[in-house]
Amino acid sequence: MVLLLIALVAVFAILFALAVTIVADGYGLRPPPRSHRAEVEFDSWGLPIVFLQPRP
Image (cartoon, rainbow, N blue to C red; front, side, top):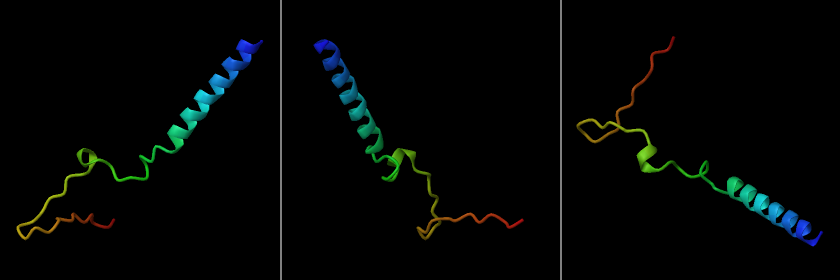
């Protein structure tokens, strides 16, 4: 009986730690790493090239 109680407490502690880690990882709040950012092209003056889509 005592071992079952200890096992239940351990399972809930692991699930709680997992939930906190998933919620607080912050990946969606930080900008993506440089390797995942879109490449920006620059013109001869060093200004970013913006491609405008024609309106339908």
